[in-house]
Image (tube, rainbow, N blue to C red; front, side):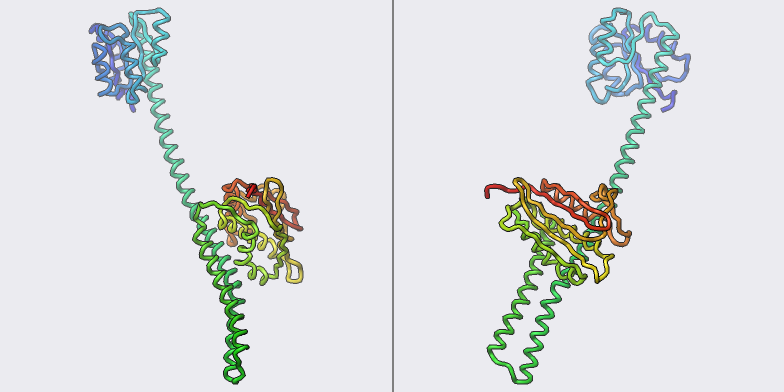
Amino acid sequence: MKNEDNVILIVDDVSINIQMIKEILNEDNIYKFIFATNGNQAVAVTRKAKPDLILLDIIMSGMNGFEVCEVLKASSETADIPIIFLTAKTESEAIVRGFELGAVDYITKPFQKDELLARVRTHLKLRQSERALRENKKNLERLVQEELEKRRKQEELLIQKSKLESLGRLAAGIAHEINQPLAGIAMGVENILLRTVNKRIDKEYLKHECEFLLQDVDRIKHIIEHIRIFSREQQSVFFENVDIKEVVENALLMVGKQYENHNIKFLLELEENIAPVFGNKYKLEQALLNLLSNSKDALEDKSRSETKLIKIRTYQDTEKICLEVEDNGKGISEEDVEKLFEPFFTTKSPDKGTGLGLSITYGIIKEMRGEISVQSKAGEYSRIKISLPKIINQ
């Protein structure tokens, strides 16, 4: 707002005082003036015109200056308009009361020209500065919100990309898991056909062979059914008692064969009769699959002649159920361990992942009131430990 746009409301029940103030301030020749001669009129004019500054007499008939100030400061529409009291009173009690009600300054009568000009100029400049600050704040808040929204959308895209990558790895694992029983079915059917052609088939052989075929069919059905439920329940927030051993078995059901085809061996140390944990079984499976994928990547650089080992261990103490995934891969440096669960952090090349897998795992475990920690030695091993609250007295 330019100086010449500043509107000053002068409130006094003595017309000569209004005229005197106007003449003094007209020396600057940059203000517009509006007037009120009583308290009720002052409130009405202020609400309508929203002046930039109010010069308000304290002693008026009817509603006095203190009461006008109190009414204006109580309304959000007029509370920020600066008020300078005009007073013949010099008692400190009256001055203090004015400040307590929200006035920014006071001017004593009779008016001193230089004092009046200086105080009005000062408070109008402050008013302009406050407006500029508020406008800048609004602009900054808008820019921050726009940037946050932009980042949120970028993160959503990256998370979706991470989920698609996980789905791709899972699909590859499922293909490997299903290929073996499919190969068994194909071989069994070929043998039956061959014996039929050679007329060497008998009922006992056929019964025996069909039992094996049905076992392979059941295995495929079991894998597909679990994948269907796993995919559907990924968005679920339903919590229940979860058997940690079952979580391990289901995860290996989905990817175990794929890892074996990469020459990776599993060593399982699963404690029997372990207490359940309270959480979402399918999200916990996703967390374990992310850890297994991380271990698989860590073992990539080993040659086929070298042992590639992933050790999965479950155990319990008095309060916690623990799940450990350890590999004998390339390990993690101390510096990288500190950043391992940060979103988008990865030691892989950009085309091999978003760096969200372990961050998502961290979020899943925290959602279940658990803890996750890392031990590693570069060039030797990495061990990630999940600790979840134990359900007691089942």
